Length: 66
Image (tube, rainbow, N blue to C red; front, side, top):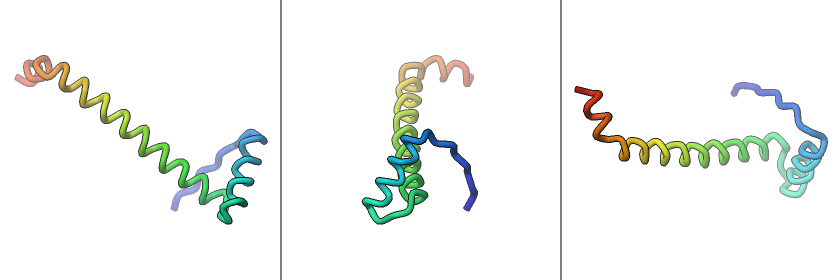
């Protein structure tokens, strides 16, 4: 597993620790889950936009490929 160091504002740091404590988890577990969820959601949005652009410009993309 790779390591990443994040500097958090004091209020975010406290909220992370409070949530982890309430869920009987470590702050690292909560942060990893939040990051995975965010990356999945953003990836879904980016793929949808890319697919829409590809559909809207399919003819141009076809001509460029000739």
